[in-house]
Length: 145
Image 1 (cartoon, helix red, strand yellow):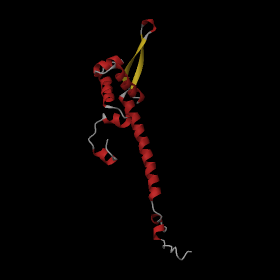
Image 2 (cartoon, one colour):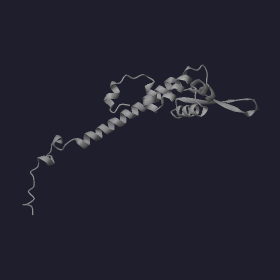
Image 3 (spheres, one colour):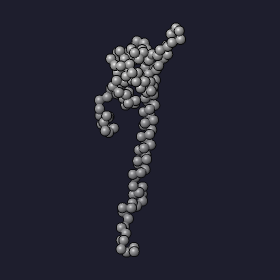
Image 4 (spheres, one colour):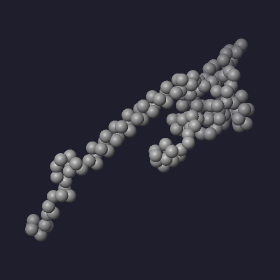
């Protein structure tokens, strides 16, 4: 991750980088998300684990992070006898994009507010039309005693 926004703007980015920027997802999380997007139907954590060649618990943690980021949905599938299992699928791309746009708008508003606070804090009195402390005559400490 670059140290400054100017560096970030100069980097060559791809749309997959948005998942990292907005949700802090790992490479594995992005791989799992792509897998879910490319799947013909919702899939189980066991299927995810087999596809990414990782332990079930690792796959589950990744799917869970995707759920927490609200870009993956979980559905419960009931079986005869009362048992059930869960399958996972990506949320609609437009819904994800709209949520990222809202987050970006909130970020933009917050940065605008902080820039305004910066401007107020660091605008000198002289720029505001008055005298600055630096331009006032120095006080002779010997005479003021």
